[in-house]
Length: 296
Image (cartoon, rainbow, N blue to C red):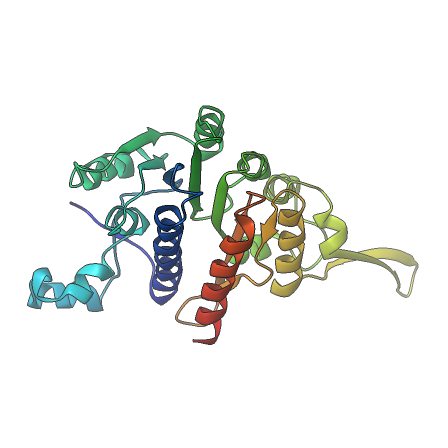
């Protein structure tokens, strides 16, 4: 099977946090008498092939050693799908969504290795498939963890609003801060196509006032307005946290900044909880994991 060649140390960071959260999440629903009656679901909305590989060093090592001889190397190949499926205390159900036809076929091969798991697979656009799944799920009897791990700005705000309205979902979301900042020019507002994409991502046009400043400038001939970007990672982070707080019961205030080997920020890892009763313990776990990784 072809493995997805993507990621690096920052990928390991996000996967370790999500894995640790899933373990603690399942403990709550197996140990807490008031929570035992719920059916738990793990949703991976950008599932890809279910596996991944990092280039160069890992490929060289794979030629020299059998994977079964190096369990830590074997774990290195796992994506979020296989990490969730391999949990010692598995979820009652799994939902995987993937739009790309080639990746979806490989994903089917990946999950075929888990005949004992109850798995639901969807080939389509997450922004269309996931709201339908939410509408067809009984949230009086179900609770879920949703992992949104897009490559770019594929997640649209109405989807996040739908997830929050279920009152039964804990959300881990990667926000493409690098792509978002590249989409916002330093001088003048973005062209219409980019502007529309940013509005779909933030769910409002307020980002224009939040990230752009217009000042009157005087040159030798006349006075004219000059618009420039006044936004960095911190400002965008704060804006997204405040937007999430408008729809979710609880939101971690300090997402993790995921950087590549050149120390360039690529993504922000956000956490949000939608259930009134479950938000407090969920945030306690998520905040601990995010803080531990940030300072670890």
